[in-house]
Image (cartoon, rainbow, N blue to C red; front, side, top):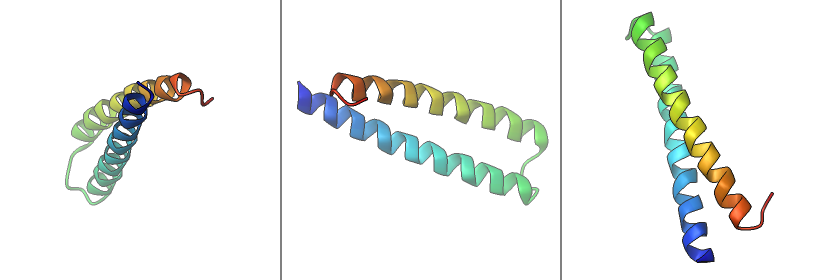
Amino acid sequence: MYEEIKDRAKSLEKQRDELLKELKKLNEDYKKGKINEDTYKAKRHEIERAIVEVMDRLAQMHFLMGET
């Protein structure tokens, strides 16, 4: 069971990293004028909510592994 939790934590870390890359690209696209402000705000909110969810699950996995 510990290995499953550890694997899930690694998967969540990868997901978090991908979301952070996506957020960075979104910011760059907005600064370059490739997307309008409404699209930017909506997509940014969506990505930020996903990051919060992933980080919450990741914190749970670390707790289950005995890491605090």
